[in-house]
Length: 361
Length: 258
Image (tube, rainbow over all chains, first blue to last red; front, side):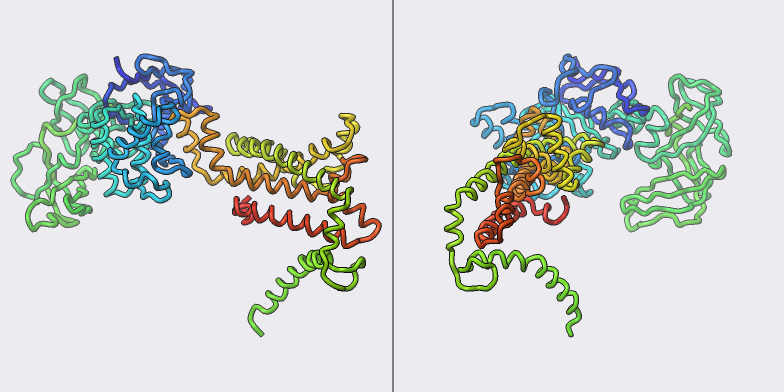
């Protein structure tokens, strides 16, 4: 039995459907992420699991028990808020001990769990400090410790890394993974940052306009997006509008306006005549100087319009003969080479016939 | 002439206008003469005389009793109103709570009198004064509490519930400690308003019950004796210390954020 089951949950605010008939389940011990743009309903869903809002329709089950009618304080579910929501009038110690005291644990147990948890998040030396004396990363850890100290069945995290700078964010991501592995608590994480979701999660549910568009492991979400929204939202992607000419288990043959016939890997359920787009990740594209010998079948001449030098890689914007501009990503790993091409250079763009994914309209 | 001469002169003038009369009252309460005319010599005799004045002591006791009861009740109700205004953002409640604050006192006095006599047919006395004082104090407390809550992160109250606190425990352990300075400031504010009030009290006091301001008024109908100066000085000292205390507990009240 799954730990958490969301069954046909719907939540409306007036005419707006914030969460629209969503169903999924989360297994015990999992790091599950709800990913989507702001306003997609992920936070509303989280608030319903926590008990701050009630679904208009559908059920939320924890350990097989319907949570309807159970107030937030009676649910074995704790939340780490985006703003951390630390109690400003309590020390770090009292903040973390709060859930234990509310659960009427003995002073002995409070002390012992407090010590354990403070060590886990490396805050033992800050236990007598007040929240306003802490840095962003430290507040973050206090909020995590407070959420975990009473060993909830489920920890909900609402964009907890949103307020941290990039370097600290990366460190906290690693800490978060380590912490989750150590305590074995199931995490339901909400974020709009796709890289964070890919880095942290066992599984991701991509949400848009109140619905779950795709639910899968990170590599499947990135490599095999189910539709245009998911493809576009997760990472960068190039879309070539095309029509299917031929479909068989070995490959697809596509007609792309201005480029002619292109071979693509097969997708189940695609029929000749289907319209859609061939989706190619920038790192699947290769560019070479114009006129260099090509061993790949899918290759087209193009012109470099612009480029973004990012240090480790450079992203080139290349215009193809049909007017489509594609992003191609080139690693800057060659020794002494900071740049390969300049704006205006004529290049040859190519990709393997088994790269890319046809997305039906 | 220094650049800001006129600015400073005007400022000093305003302060003089405000505080010289008060200073005169304080000064003459120590004057060894029954006439408020010329300085004769220092004495604390008027205060001694005051302490033996049974009418005055009775009125002072009434005032203290009324102020304590009214400000306690007003603090509880006003705190509840302030929290409700913050949490539910009702459209009508703020007007209803704040109107008595802005209403001319004479209007409030007359309408309360009519209400007590004509509608409720009550006997006027201590009870009607307490109710009237509660009425005009609630608004002040509510405004202070709401101002205090306005700057707070809403999610800390949800966090308390989320971490296992019942609504009452959330109030007791999180909300109350955080608004406590406002509660104390509200109480002190109500207390000073109540102990100083004349107009409204005058209407709803009825016969037989008198408060300190009413007693002072009835005394100066005859003459402004140094005894009145003495009691006024004491009242001033009490009010001033209350305001100082209030500003200690909730500095934002004096800074006009409320």
